[in-house]
Amino acid sequence: MKSPIGKAARIGTVAGLAALAATETAEAAAVLSTSISMVDLSTAADNGALVLDIDGDGTNDFSITGEYYGPNPALSFNGASTSAWMVSDGFAASTVGEGYELANGSLPNGASYVSTTILFDPFAGVSYGEFYAGVRFFRDGELHFGWLKFDMPTDGTLNGATLVSAGWESEAYAPSTVGAVPEASALFISAVFGGLAAGRRRR
Ligand SMILES: [Ca+2]
Image 1 (tube, protein in one colour):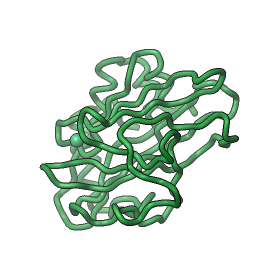
Image 2 (tube, protein in one colour; image 1 turned 90 degrees about the vertical axis):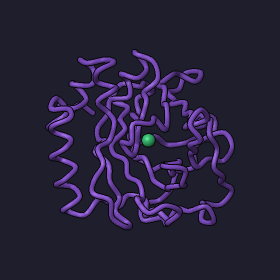
Image 3 (cartoon, protein in one colour; image 1 turned 45 degrees about the horizontal axis):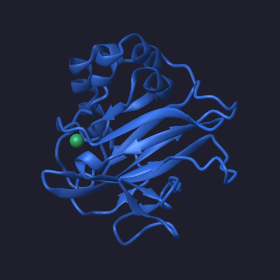
Image 4 (cartoon, protein in one colour; image 1 turned 45 degrees about the vertical axis):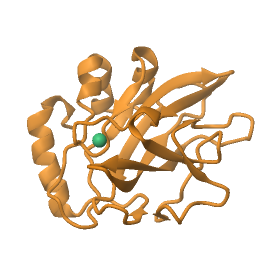
């Protein structure tokens, strides 16, 4: 999927990746906040791992690398170095439905939190397209839950592979509603500071 932001990310390699850091919204209970959207993951394949700071606190939480697993496009995920996890069946990512209340004690059947995995199991007939992946990570020593929304192409390549959006629950240890978007006021604050920090990412 082409987008102005994806184009910007391709032009600015390291700078573009650095600009992915999310900006923080005002701290308030149960507000999901992120400014990550429409990141071109084929860029990550060309330039090494995409480093993701999901909560914008200056500490990177995940790295994601686009690659081919056999003939199939895949994304390898790693949160091991920063104590971050993705919901997985132990090998591939377990997709999480929109609206799912993700927490430590609330996971899809057969799933657990892992810090390293391949996102797709090309031998299990996984249909590509848009899907949510659940995550958890530490922020100031406390556990937070969140989600990443991906769009993987169906043509057997990484071209158009996109991190569509991301969100996280600002209240530590509270369940994260997968796919929930920030409240309007939080979106406004995020947009203002996002514009100051990295004008090139503005639509
Ligand atoms: Ca972080």
